[in-house]
Image (cartoon, rainbow over all chains, first blue to last red; front, side, top):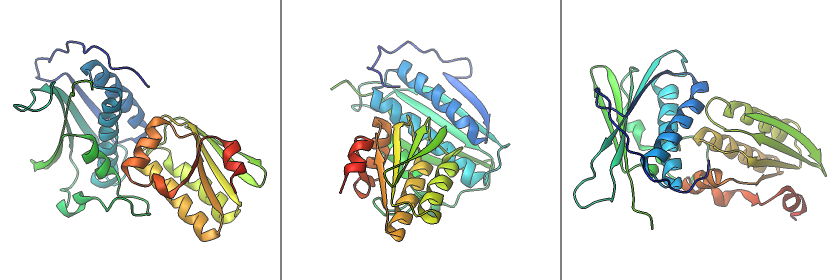
Length: 160
Length: 111
């Protein structure tokens, strides 16, 4: 949905330290529900329309990668998403950041496969990771306790 | 997502409504590859004016359609790109490889 940036709503963290947590199965038919949720959350957080689309795209592409690569297309595996507000680094950005942590319990991902492919190549596939990197300010991947954890952060910019 | 097709002036126009993502991009891919590879339609036009969101798997399907049309010596066109669709094609630096028109009249009139 196209929109003008709204005045951010004061969002409160819960006792678990998060604004929002989601537990979904790895069913591709749920991607639209997550996109809708992230769109509304980013609007309330105060992102511009373009940055709302960017964050939504990054989350959608990350989920797609988990479904395809960590779970090999199985639709019944667990994925957890957690959203919280984080302070901006000193001297950078005008507003808080939205941190999104996405966890799956698939096999360890080969770091070699986390590089994506050269942009502009006229061939299908391999674009998701580029979309994530181009959309977010921070993209970090961790493997711990048999869990793959992707941490994404996007900071709110002052209107131009 | 819904996909329907119509034939006009030796072209097939696919009208797609809704989001194209991992759940349904295989259906898009299957429909357009059938049109290009099996039916060898001279012009295939993808009307994306009612597509609000397209992900990397949707872009990959469009690239496959384009490559198949080049192999078949036919044309593959995109019309009615939304802001979001245009953004992802620009991010992937693939916008320049497609024939893009504002509407179907322009696409059908293209030499």
